Image 1 (cartoon, rainbow, N blue to C red):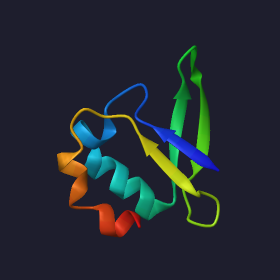
Image 2: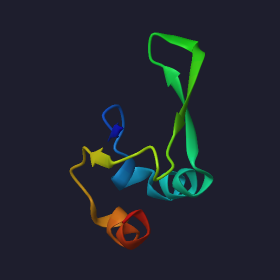
Image 3: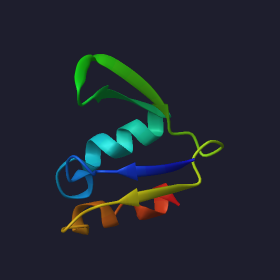
Length: 70
């Protein structure tokens, strides 16, 4: 699976600590942007995720965690 992260918000620039904690937990819960009551649990375990694509203008805060993401 390919995860397109931070399209709605800039995770590397502003939420990198949250993201690393979600990677450690192995999942995240994401609300549907059109129906806030509908939540999806996204599996973030290495066996299910092949690539994470980040959309950012400021990758600097996340760079210190790249070895953990590898």
